Image 1: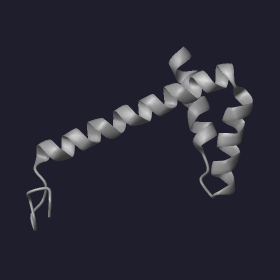
Image 2: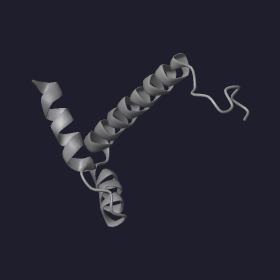
Image 3: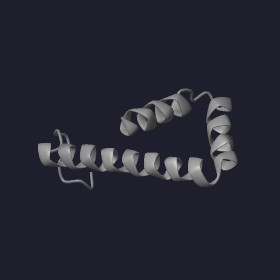
Length: 72
C-alpha cells in the first residue's frame, strides 16, 4: 500500500486528521449552501431536488435546522 501501514491500522494522527478535514469540508459546504440560499435560492432548490431524486433525503431539513439554531 502507498500509505505506509500495510496490513495494520492507520496511526491515530491520520484518523484525527481525516476527521478534522471532513468536518471542515462539511462546514464549508454548509456555508456555501447558506450563501446560495440567500443569493440564488432557485439554484439551491435544484441541488436539493436532484439529491432527493437520487435517493438522498434530509439535506434541506438539516440545513434549515442548522441555520435556525445558529440564529439563536
